[in-house]
Image 1 (cartoon, rainbow over the protein chains, first blue to last red):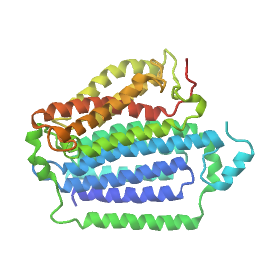
Image 2 (spheres, chains in turn blue, purple):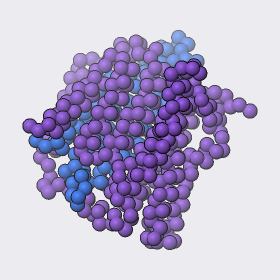
Image 3 (tube, chains in turn red, orange):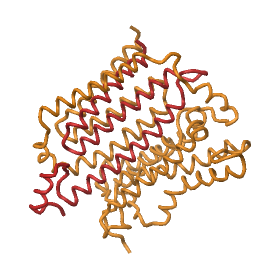
Image 4 (cartoon, one colour):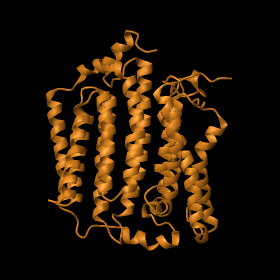
Length: 113
Length: 315
């Protein structure tokens, strides 16, 4: 087994872990974290494809590598927007939950600023 | 088993172990701390996959800047954690999610274990035009020339995200300064760090931008380092967080994408299409675009971490 296969299996595990976390965690912040984990796994899969495409004296195919660089920056923008939305939800409703029952009860007891 | 293989196996196991910790950790803050180390370990994995450009980006943006953002959010949201503990879904959903996750992982693992032969690669095609571009780093060539439109659109996404973040500010704070409160005493260690580190960090950031033409590096990685230095200075309170209505600030934010777009449209008239560079000016044009992009990237990344305005606009 070479390094590319090894990290490929690692990336498959990361995608599964991220998917599991994003489904079962009730807290939105933990969902965002898990989603980033999933993204990290997908990016690493690109890295494996790039490494296997090593040719023309290059250590890897530069096209998937460049796509991942763009992807990391876009993932960061989306994370920043999601986190700000979450903090705004907390500011307005006094809770940071996606559950409808908990949200309405916290509104009635005067949560928020 | 060679030493390199031992290193790879250990690193891969460590990455998965930290990922398990991020999903299983008791508190969100502990999970975020795990996420920062996850990013750094992943950067090492990228280096082992001969993708040093990606490793730099992952360490600077995926781990550093994202980590700063998530840490602030986790400490602000700490009061909500105990309440949402009771919302954990039942055992049935856990099992369904676990089965789904295992199936997806197994599918991806199968794709890894049964590779396409011969492996698809655009590396020879990318190598053909490198001498013409006078850019020796193939990743920079893809980002700035072959797939420049991706890079341009990504800059627009960054700007849109910043507009989205700003638009979540309450009305009365519009135009004010983001809520990145200075947290240190004037004689504290953070202030010392914010005085010592930026001169070195700024040089490193500019070097990484410059060296991107011939070696791993470039506008994203350099910009992220400059953004980190700017954030450090603002958090230490050595310089105020700028109010978002400032003209100079908005100019810095758009100058990179604007120059990129201008060069792109000029391509219609001078060479032969959108974002194609005239042959004799390719290298200077790429450098000019990268320099202004780095400036805009640094400002946008810093302001995305700083968040929406939380103080009233000063007259």
